[in-house]
Length: 511
Image (cartoon, rainbow, N blue to C red; front, side, top):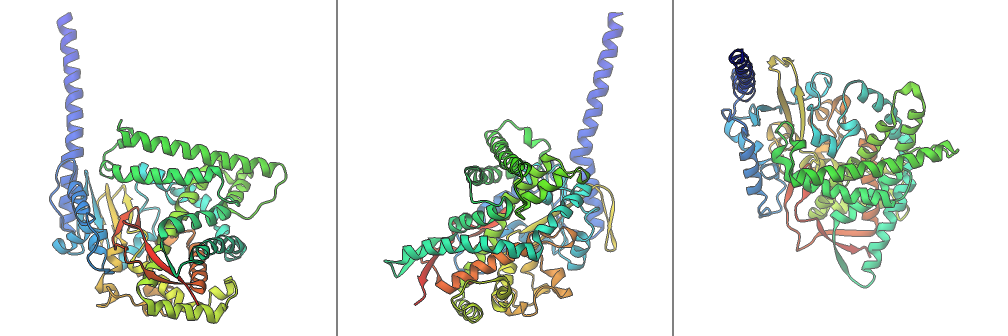
């Protein structure tokens, strides 16, 4: 009897082990090789699948190599540095290629027609599932899908209507003039001052966003949130090589523990901000037109199906993404103004012609054609977001292809923005005049992806452009910009495009 029981137990264990082994073999070998075969049949090139890591180690090695020193010249040809492995794969396989991240290949899609199709079909080409890092770094509307995204988008859209943005202008004016006055005081006894614009713009944009997201100045809670954001970014960079492992969020490493602790504290701080405003509204406080007020009104309307946790998540997301994306784009706009003094002077002449020495206003901002052209060209050469990722969970038709399930698609914006086949042989030159007719004609709309595209394009696009245009106009009224002799040109992709060694500019007060 005992021998029979033992035999049954051994047989069951053997079946379990065999079943688990088959699943592992399928996941880590047979399925990737089957997908690889299909992709090659579709005309995509790429390295042969390598078990577990794929190309990930090579991606990290090449990134570390190119960012180990600054660029020798202040070149705008940043694609080989910002997306080095993607650039390498184009040289090796052409524009149709895939890169292995763990067991999943990422197809690079740069054809503007296919890109437009992907972005216009968000229910089929979705945000990558189980993207825990995306939820920590971004979250909210930017990471949600399906009905949740539709409901929240409908609630938040009114915040970014032009009339609402006009109401936000006094807050932008106040924050901006305070910063300019502080720079003026530093210039009182100096002909010029050197400023690292990264911390300066981070503080300025954070102050503006606090006023527009939660209708208040930077509080102790929001100040702590922005401090923790830096911790989150630092730990995320360290964890980049683990993110393609399923379950990395539960790894018992120091970096994961630090990231989790920071994320938990941020959620707690945002909850304090949200519940305090909710109590104020229950006691009769009026809606101040900010994003938090709109979300809380929806929360109190049970028909909207918005929970308090939804409000907290959206508030956290806008306090995170809004300041960082806006600041990173503005940094590179100031860089090109400093690098190209002839365009800086043309922009200043336009600003003074429209506003004189008066404070800029929304109506006048719309007349700043040269300033806007410069901003768009800066966004083309130095896009704040270098890539957009999408995934499919079943065989899906794209153009004349049927793509296999379980793959991801990457739209490498930086490579597209530096592609001579799309922009012409002068693609590496700074030429704002290429945006003389704006970005709303059909050709530009399929090529210019600074704010992504399709139904999921950046909700805060208008607000970011107004904020940056106003700051640039105000700055040009008071100061001239030059690249500091100590500036090192080293753009680096770190979730957003950042200057690796800061953005040191020399400011001189206009006579």
